[in-house]
Image 1 (tube, rainbow, N blue to C red):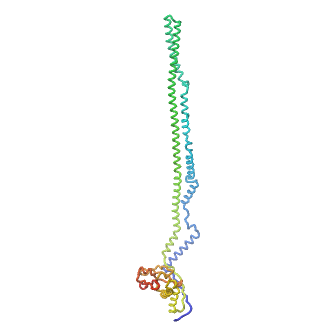
Image 2: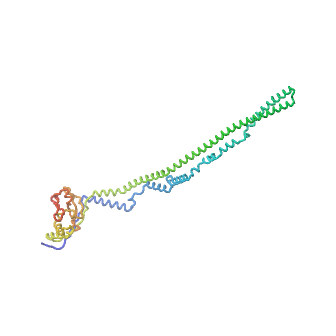
Image 3: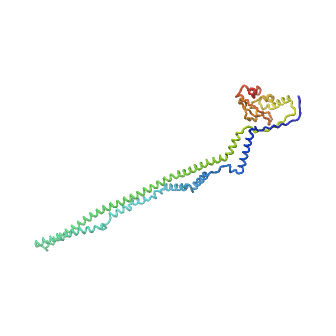
Length: 403
């Protein structure tokens, strides 16, 4: 075996694909430009409230304060006050027809008028005296022109004029006159009284009916107005809710405008992100490795086995023997369980198997290898995968898969 001393350090630089580089520069420069343009004014990156939203918020605040949008607060207060008065009986007490109906029911104005008519004096009738005088004059004239002269003439013819019999006849005639006058007056007055009473009763009844009708009409109008007010109080919450819904709809419409404005603000970033996603792949990297000036192949193999033995404890109960096998045959193992820092390269073999960049558990942190994973190969070409008897890890025949 030969040996040597000292190390040599090699730095490997991998640049992005040359055809990819201009697009990467455009993406990076675009990102920088966008950042610089927005960094000076961060408010320009956020869409503010739209006029519709501002209007809706103002109207909503006005509704809450009861100073806008139809004075919703005052409307609710009025409804509450009316409902409270209704429950307390103020509605019945304020009916303007109640007092009139009470007077009628308690011998009020209409009944009192009927009583006055029934107890009124006949002297209040301006036609009564004239009717009585006319009837009395007719009877008196008949007595003076017929009864008295006929009695005097008959007595005179019989030679008894001025006698006691004549005087008795005159007295009887006068008594008959008085009786006739009294009967006539009584009959006439009674007839007139009865007719007058009938007329007055009819008039009083009409007056009472008119008062009842008027009071009933007033009560009906009052009830109608009260029902309309009550219905209005029912509609008050619906009206306020409707106004609130209008505000919500207005705010939501403004929200759509705000979302559109935000998309327009984000559009350059979105386009840049889409552009960057089209430029896929690795951007290149740098790696540094140190190797001895002189190498001893046998020592290298032993060193690999020794490193594997040192990691035997990681592979379960097989101990350092499995670790030594892994160290000596690490190039053949493609089991995913023995690899770390696995990442796809974006490239595939002709048979479609994906290639990965990785390092083995025993590799130094900077080492990267490229190969396949045995579980992928098993799904595509099971015959190219074998399992190591002692360790149980998979190996892949790269010649069989065209690798």
